[in-house]
Amino acid sequence: MKKTTALSLLALAAMVPAFAQPVPDLSLPKFPTPPPAVTAENSIIKPPYADVPEYKVDPSVPQGDVREFILYSEDSKIYPGIVRIENDISAKRDAYGNRMPAPDAAVSKPGRYERHVWVYIPKQVKPNAPFMVVQDGHGYINRMAPVLDNMIAAHRVPAMIIVAPDSGGSDAQGSQRGLEYDTLSDRYSNWVEQELLPAVSKNYGVTLTSDPEGRATMGGSSGAICAWTMAWYHPERYHKVLSYSGTFVNQASPQDPKTPRGGWEYHATMIPKAAKKPIRIWMEVGEKDLHFDDPESTWHNWPLANNRMATVLKIFAMDARHVDNGVVRQTLPSALEWLWRDYPKS
Image (tube, rainbow, N blue to C red):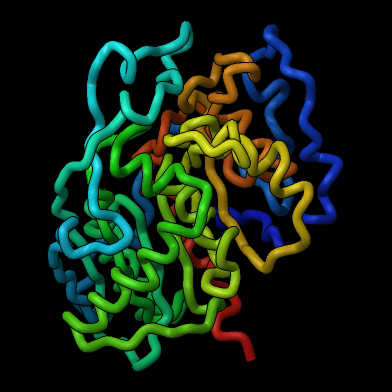
């Protein structure tokens, strides 16, 4: 199997010229034109996409346990719960299908949720275990379990715990998921630290490392920008990020005047102005990801946004869609191996 690699953003601040914000061009062509060149830190993959051997269950290796529990909105001090109001104002969209901003009162109202959380615990787990927080957990936990069983047994990744919470529900502006994942702040990271991880330790008797080198976070779409935000606002907590089709676009709700274009601000203004942060990120985006034909002025073009997030796209998947399942199943093992390649550091 060809090993794919991606770029560490440890030297991010040195790349400032590549992130300069261009004047919006309404005639922006399809991205990319031409496709990015293949280098040691950049891979283009093409269909047909296929499962790699790590997905096959091997009875001869130790099988980790997958557990499940529920967190309730009424028990949370950080996310008491909202639901989106569907009406003519909150559902208004522009010519490209993007949900347009609306007054906060027209978007959401208080509402209860139940959050399912899945936890993968390898048989080889030790105290102060490394771990990865995976957003939209139900969509990943079953596909990750056999991969981790095989890779941990082969000493290709550490014996890590996977903490895989679902969001509080719904999607996009005005939703609990949108509030958690698309907001540019440390609120979600604080919720993970103060409410989620303590619940995992209490329920299953495991201890989790406080070393940021042993802490990773992962997601697809809005779950991916959430993963990045967790590390960006608290790099002392997380040094590793795995992103599929990250929503680095204008999706945040409620809007914040400090970051008026939501996730678009990361590559347009925030990263170029910041000092170096010790974050390693593996990124993927599809050729036909969401709104790939939209002009830049919409601030909602997924491939363009991901390209701006790193000088060269790390994994560019030809003819692939948004968080393309075939791409995930082909690349996840090599992405995990790259992300954890030097852990623990001596």
